[in-house]
Figure 1 (cartoon, rainbow, N blue to C red):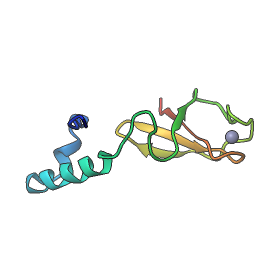
Figure 2: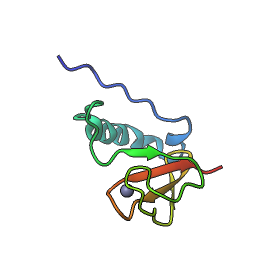
Figure 3: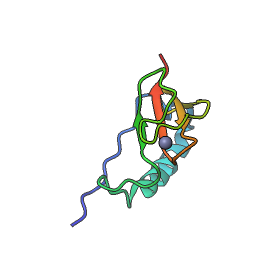
Figure 4: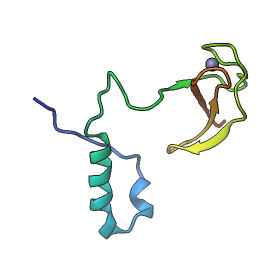
Length: 92
Ligand SMILES: [Zn+2]
């Protein structure tokens, strides 16, 4: 049997969303996660690295210039030039 899905958003995330749109947004989020299997997450898993790391911990190739992503705390995300690894660390 499938467990009911419980999604907790970070505090304040919904503040920017008009009240009448929140229900619709939650429905969309739930749909996006409906098939989510924690043992086999969709997409490329992000590997956490230490700030200042410039080489891929997986294959040793150089990491691309980071791009900042907010999720919801700011993180710098690096793509590996050698493998399809994605790495990130929080912005200090
Ligand atoms: Zn790599």
